[in-house]
Image (cartoon, rainbow, N blue to C red):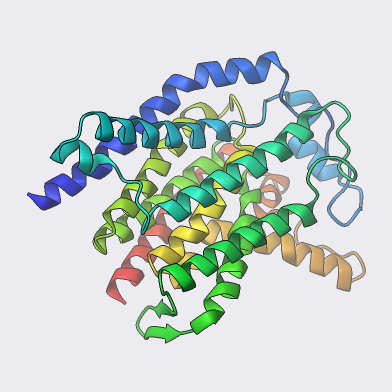
Length: 353
């Protein structure tokens, strides 16, 4: 009976979130198109200041005119679902309605806070990005500012784990607990910065949605197996929001996830990995994000220390596959397949270890 109630606690909020996302999309999309919320300038240079002809060809921001800020559907539906269930639980108190509320201090306050901070920071950056006079060097949030904010969020999360939750050990599959003490704080900061870097996977229609759905589903299953039911509900509520976004992001995309969605998801992911104490399997479950961020880092290092020589035709990695001739849909489908494979492998390792 308890198992049935826990399953309902996960199923109903996630389905409600998906429904909210589907219903709110026409209004969100209508607003974005009405106000021309797409980038007005194509990418001119890479992050190291070199010309980027391949990137210009692949993105073609000036010609495509697809709005950014589709991530509003993801975090908007998540918050609507959480608020609705909270209101129902307090207006109509009872054993069923109380059970459906999944916002709790010990399990979901922190991931919700990280999710909210990431959404706002990304939204600000997106707004600057779509302004006609947007200047990548002078306007918007610079990379340093964004990394500073993410690092600060990581510091807050690390302090919460250490001071409030008493977390001083990290679980390593097949080896057991590894005592890190106060070092948990810089470790959280490092992981948060790493997951945030993986947000650049949002570059092809449908790609990021499928990848993030697989990742959060994996952590939702791990949380459920560990009887962290509220956290599992949070993960699957996020999946519901991501799938609602993906419904409209499959080719041809109606809008892009962009920073407001990617930053919210990656910051929440870092927190969830620590709350489940399965951060050691994060590089496996989120391997597509690791490969994406790693390819960009390797490309920069190669050009800096090898006299401008590149490893990939263009970075991140998914654009390299496009540059060698793979159709965008093939890249997306294969990333989805790999995402599911690595997610399943991560679940098995986490629970078997």
